[in-house]
Length: 292
Image (tube, rainbow, N blue to C red; front, side):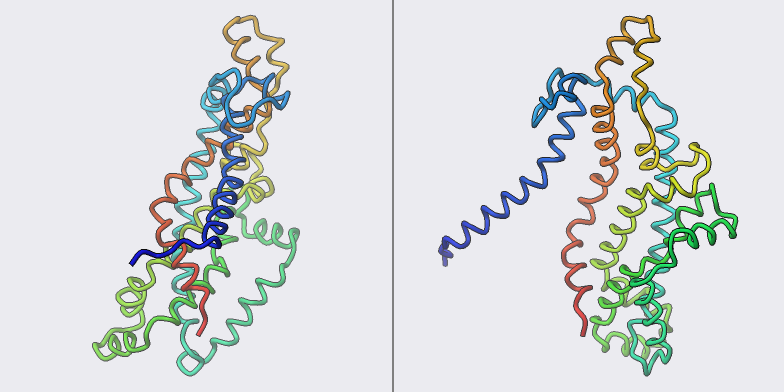
């Protein structure tokens, strides 16, 4: 049976297409600027296609050793921080998914969790706490303060609560303890939500720049986003060079083209990871947001 196409469907598809285009426009414009010459970019002549095409901005970024050092720190942060987030989120969400009769202190812990979502100690106490633990200027200052993402815990907890209780009872009858039940029953059933919270953690660690600015005393310890935020091209170097090739290359660079190239380079790792987790994303959000 062929489904008839109604005018409302056409309107919805048009709205979705316009929304998708509106989301892509800034990315396309940034890519075009990153490949354009400095004069065209500064004059606002670049829209969806590069003007005076060149690779000078990308060469400037990739020639900087500090860029690769910051890139490595961000990779280390994502791996270490993502693993910590994954483990703590899972082992915290599992007991909280039980009823008060099974876990008597559940409501007390839930109140603490909700309280942390609504109120914060403030920037200065946060900094003093990290400083008192001796974590400043280290990778641990970037991963431990955000070790327990509360939103991810609630999302995964609601998914665990939707798992049929018969599976839990069957595992108990077979002699499985809490750990075996978690790893053998709940984790395989919760793959969409686990992939979703993992994606949230990866993107959060990769895009974070503010904590690197506050907690890192030396630029050698900056993560990539902090490095991108702080790096500024000194165009005075154009006046100090006598090499014609270097003069021509530097004259094609401006803060706008360089910043655009840095944004594009920093997007690449997330764009490589996202397709593998995207198919779990929608189902993980919907299922984890439903509360019985």
